[in-house]
Image 1: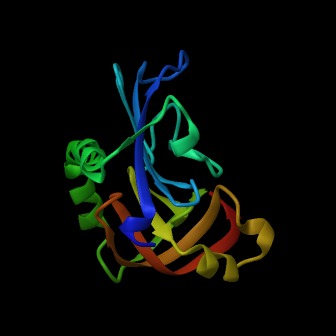
Image 2: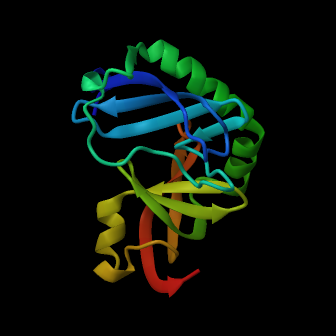
Length: 179
């Protein structure tokens, strides 16, 4: 999907149970209303779709949402979204550099399925590092019931998704065992 098919939005996020307090949520969504990246900048921290928050896990809107039809949502430029997103990535640059050093291209890695995103299967590689695997390839390697959270995954490092700070995986194998 090209970037021209994406829209960028923000809205005031008032969630009394949020670990980051009240703030502003920024969303990148495709033309169907499916969120691809999301970040909430709150008074007490940040929740983002690319990193796992200790209390809330990952944060990405589910389902298809017509953001243009919601009065409280404001359409923004990609530049405004990227400014907030890139500041988030910069705060995690040292951890990202460490993850790439530990997971070199061509290396075999082991982890477990964390969750599923529109981009593919998010794989927890340990030590705060996460991989992204192609859903079709992963599901072809196993029985349907093994395509669920906490199932073991082995794969080869193909490259790096700098936009989300994820390790790109290939030759993904999902196993019946839980981790």
